[in-house]
Length: 212
Image 1: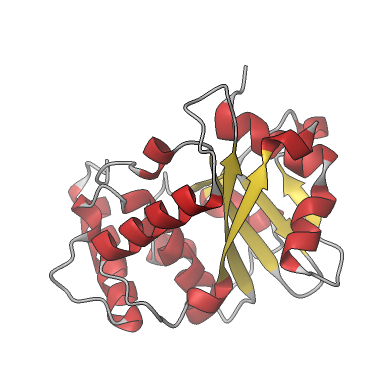
Image 2: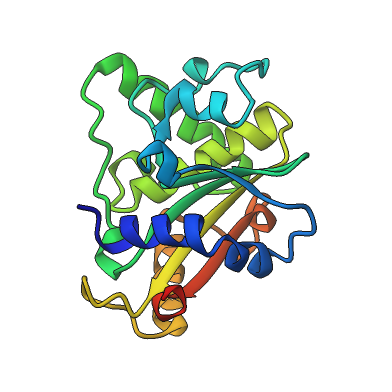
């Protein structure tokens, strides 16, 4: 049975989708394609997440940028001209995914090449090793945003949904706690205060008490 951020995002998307709609001040209706109750809350990754968003015909193929077994998206949504990739968190330690777990040499080479490309674009010093970072997951989510926006000219947005007061885990009580953690993530990854993709990365702070 789902709990923590997985459960929270399922409730948010299926029962209270207007919360994200309002938080983003999005005028066009967001259609959520996952995780849907009617689809048994299925999550998508690799080429399937692109297909679900109607992006399976993009010119620059995902396999040229990232190996199989890539980012598993907690939620996916779209409007008539935008797509939304969602990563959800309910407690601080979720941020630390640990380094890349890719084992095949071919996969590691491709990931490293793509991450270095993203770092160069964002102005991150090459001494920051995103593959070995405790915040590798955050880095690869940003890399996928780069893949869609920069490589394929898709109007993509990355949503980090940070839940407050989820007592099924060690709860985060305030927005300030999350903001302090986000600053630490950016510092650890060498992200400058202002970087090219920042306008398309949205931090949403959702109180689980509003999901009842």
